[in-house]
Length: 113
Length: 113
Picture 1 (tube, rainbow over the protein chains, first blue to last red):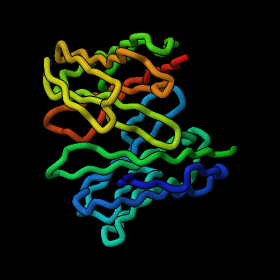
Picture 2 (picture 1 turned 30 degrees about the vertical axis):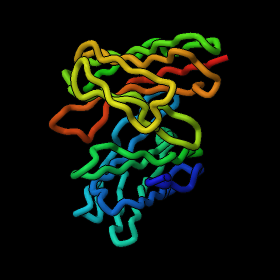
Picture 3 (picture 1 turned 90 degrees about the vertical axis):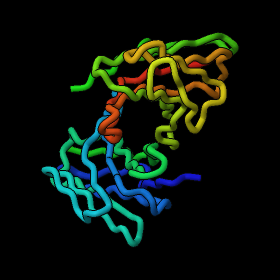
């Protein structure tokens, strides 16, 4: 059972465009949603995160939009740069009960110059 | 910045052989984890540890053992390697007080032939 789903599996955008990566989840107890960025040959690294009490979290060109009612969130990367080309993982956890961070299957983003 | 070091970076093993993957962290983190990454599956938790000399099973522990001889070191052991265990393995650590941000190593690419 995949509790965290991501789409699309891969995405290609041109430099300067906005990339939109989608994520949905099933467990209504999830209240913390980090996004990890992974470059080839490296381990994932925390990029940005949001808690369920907020509907938006911004950090420079990266913004998370969160819809609690629909159990969906998205990562928007504005003014995409070739250096943003990486795999992005959406994850989720609950602050009560199970501590475990559940990862989605990832979206591979390619930004063309 | 957190430092998690994995060794080896890559390994080729024969079916039925024993494989040991090592992880060392210098951040004084209590929690350590072993994840497996396969295309289309994201990151799946194999084993984890809250404290030295104690390990716990994650979501996919079959075929794997773990050892935490000290706070800094966490090993993943494949007693009888199989073809299906070909994957990239990541070690991660996190602080007890902030069990949300995972710090990953660079990964070990394991090929079982």
